[in-house]
Length: 452
Image (tube, rainbow, N blue to C red; front, side):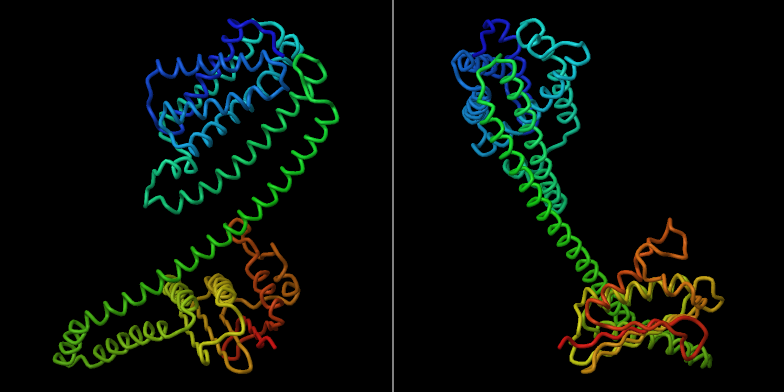
């Protein structure tokens, strides 16, 4: 047991308890009387001292103290039980990590042994103060800046609808952070336990027990890390897919809105046409009608395309081509609306091919891109043509390699064609690189058969 006298012990334990309660108040955004916090810190320290005077194993007093402080948080700070437990464990983890790193580091700097520090009351107090001051400053900065942990805010019922998605992502990050902190704390405690066993300062478990406990902790840590990492990867993939769907839905909404605008301005269009005809400007009237017809028919055609993700990507690339002065022609015909591949993969194929085509024709005097997509009972055929510079034969064998690009590596990752090749291979499809029939340039032809 720890035979350190009460007064020197309180010089260590009371500041630790004060810092723990202060961290809890900061994390939960609560305000309590300093007098109440001081009294609770004294009671906690006296309780901890009583446990330490008993012949119990090393670490039991820490668990008992955390349990008592959790009860105090519920009774005096009026925090729910689950919230009290979460903030108390989290604060104890930070304190344990800070102490487990700071004290050995200071002992190494001053060339002292840990048993010397533990046995000397004055050294014990002096070597405890640095990490307590650091944690207090850190807690003060967190409170001053208004930072909060979504994991705790959710339990306290603090919600911000505009921040909902970010909050959910932060909760997942906090879960992973908490797991890492707990694992680090367990390793620190095991290290201290081995040290206590070696020096005999505290009653400790046998070496066999410590090895068994250490092995179990390491095994559980590895399994927990694998599980949480796998879960987070799935969540990230789901979020990315959801963001893509939101983008496509927003683009489809914009198409509807633009069509409504054209319909709303139909009277204005008729007025303009009437004045052209009245002034005998028949050529201008014909041009105006043709432009209006192409705009309305293009929007209407896009709205008829299924799946909507494909319509959205074509609309986005069409607007991009229009801004850059590129002529973009497209024709899509999908029989019965069914596809031999998923809408996400079709969108990736189309988007990456169009991105490459948009880059390829930028230096052309009269840039042009053609997209033809046909799907019937035989399968899906996707053709993207452009009148950019032909691809040399010695380059063609490398363009589907991950990371390979003939453009600036600062602006291009070299993954577009690699992703295309992966999707085609997944569906046992075929890819042909050739020259378009109508002009000089490059044409990618992709064929995806139905899965038998």
